[in-house]
Image 1: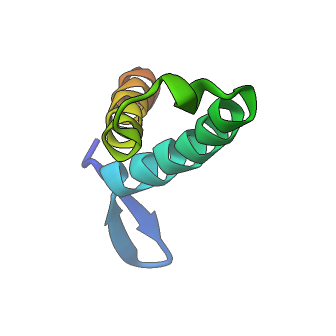
Image 2 (image 1 turned 135 degrees about the vertical axis):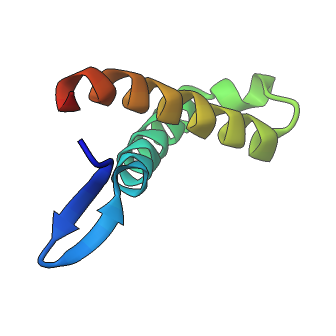
Length: 69
């Protein structure tokens, strides 16, 4: 495994693809949290959203790594 994806001759780091997946998941989770009113309990929403993204990115990488090896 080289850690890169070949998209029509352009090599893209696998992490970039995982980041896009984590971003999509983050947008869905943020919408659900906003709908439930959970953001009323959050002190610093941008910091929480960043932490949510980092946690989801870690989960996506942890789940995707065994699949690629």
